[in-house]
Structures are given as C-alpha cells and as structure tokens.
Image (cartoon, rainbow, N blue to C red; front, side, top):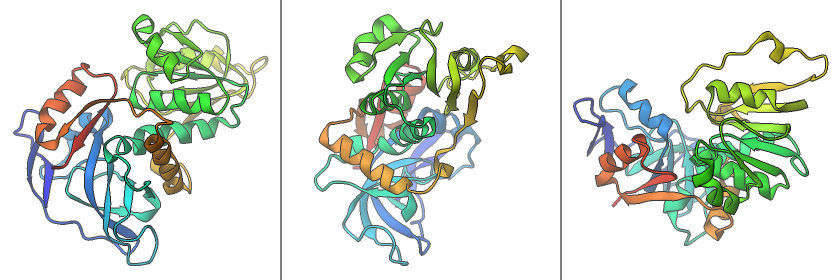
Length: 307
C-alpha cells in the first residue's frame, strides 16, 4: 500500500512511499482511508519516530474487512477512526472500540477531523460534569480542540468564555461558534465552574486561579510549551475548596469512545458542528500542508485526501 512514511532525510520528515499492508487483529477492522486530518502534536513528534514508520491519529474511510470477532461495522460501512499510528496510509487496521459509523453519503474530509479534536473536546467536557447554567472557560479556543469545545459547551447550555491570543481578530468567529465572551491570555473574566485547558504554561496557572469551589480544570494540551509554576497559595483550600486539576489522554478516557465518535461525526455531517477546515488537498501536498500548519499560517484543521 501507499503511505506517508517517516523519512528523516526529508525536510518535513515525510515522504510518500510503499509500506506493507496492515494485518488486523481479531478485534480490528481493516479500513480503506479516504481522508486524514493533521494535529500539531503528531507533527512535532515526527522527528522522534523511527524511519519508515507510518504516523497518523485521525482517519475516515470505508471498512473493507470487518473484524473477525464480529465486533464493529460490516464491510462497506463508512467509518471514522482513531489510533496512535497508521492513519496516513491507504489501509488502516483499527480497534473496533475506537471507530464509529458515519452517515452514508457524508463528506469524509471534515469527518476526518473528529477523532482527536472533537473527541478530546467532548470527553474533556464530560469530565467537567453537567454544564447547564455553568461558566466554562476554553483556552486555545481557535485551535482544533478549542473550536469544538466552544461549540459543544454552548450546545450543553454553558456560558462559554473563549480564550485566544488575538481576541480582537478572533472574536467574531468564536462568537459565531457559540462563545458568549472572548478574552485574551490575561483571562479578564469572572470565576468559572470548569476549564478545558489547551495551552499550558502561565495560562494554566491563571485558569486554575479562576476556578470556583468544586470546579475542575482538565489539562488536555500544552501548546505553549511553557512551564506551569504554582505558588503554595494556589492550593490553599480554606475558602476555595475542592478545585481539581486533572490530566487527560483520549484513548484511555473510558468506554464508549466509538459511540462518541459516531455521534460527533453525525453532527459534523449534518452541519450542526463546524469542523473548521482551513486547508484541504491531496496527500501528495503533505509537505505544503505541514509547513503551513507548523508555521502558524493556518487557523483551523488540515485535511489530506488520499487520491
């Protein structure tokens, strides 16, 4: 099969080449990939992967061989898939617990953005608990996870505070997605019940300081790369008890992930959720797409189509 392979002699550590077809385990379906979306985290990790590896977390496609154990969708079903590798290839073997059916006829390009971005947003919001009439802060709100978190929190009845490094330039777009407030990294807003935190560094510290008693901060990403340094006073619980910081890892976030991916894919297919695709094109242009994403020239998701 053709695949995007790790090649450390290439400028972006990638080349289009040939790789062995994957051999599915009994609880895995074999999927022919139609589209894959890129995440900044997987791109920055390319330099640490062995040469010849097939990277990629997100993919959408069609089942060409159902799982031998009878789990998961039948042959011919369109699906959205999540894994820690193997998405940037014509064929992918996927655990049936980590794939979800997609409505027939749906555009698989936007659907491919669902697994990491929308899946992380949904599971992080679940961790915050009931959201109706609650104030929810979303940092890094213009990124892939952030955009989905803003939309989903608004659908759940939360008062959504979106945080971005460019509030003036991003306010209209974030309000269109459902944000009630748009603020900068100074987090100039009232206390909140929950935080979906995607930036790390000083922003995480400041977001934690905004938590009301009993509030939760879910640390999903660390886009800034900065250190989060707390003073002892941050954990003084006399007047602000039970404020929780919790870590997050999507594949280990609990059962039912396939059903969540299917629900999210249906919402994207219907137009109820905006995938925010900023770049879409052939996987033969992967270097161009990777450069645009890593250089900060895109706000939104990148989708590669396998042609």
